[in-house]
Length: 201
Image (cartoon, rainbow, N blue to C red; front, side, top):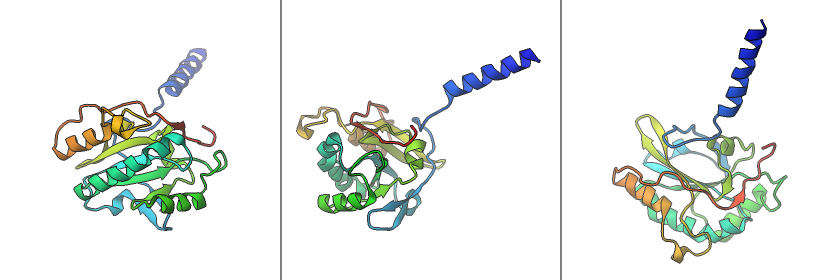
């Protein structure tokens, strides 16, 4: 009996250390339905013609997010017509981060003239599913017969301050490879930015 209990405890401990948090490269993503700043509910399934997505966890207030704002708009401008629209998701709890309420998201999207979804992850279920830890944090998804698979995770590029000084454009390289039906050379980089403000995390 003692041996059985010991084995069960070892199993539980092992599970706690190996429990997966968030998506990895090649994982199939579960769809979500989140409230957009225009009041509509948006899911990935809404985009019937999409070849994939550039899902970015971002926010209103992080200085690094602000530095990437124009680059995010440029990504959507470049790739929406090619089948890879930008989907922006705010993962932050307004209880933990001032300036991140839905009302403030609406104002921010209007100010920045977003022409892509800016979604409110009110329950924070989606950020937990993806495993996003920072703002901005990018997940490039590729539509396959098996579903939407994660093809790239990480940063937009390698310069958090100056777009014109970036030498490696990770998201662009990943999407370009997918459009050309080639393997993505760099599938993971470190997302640099403010920590996502998740309750009970």
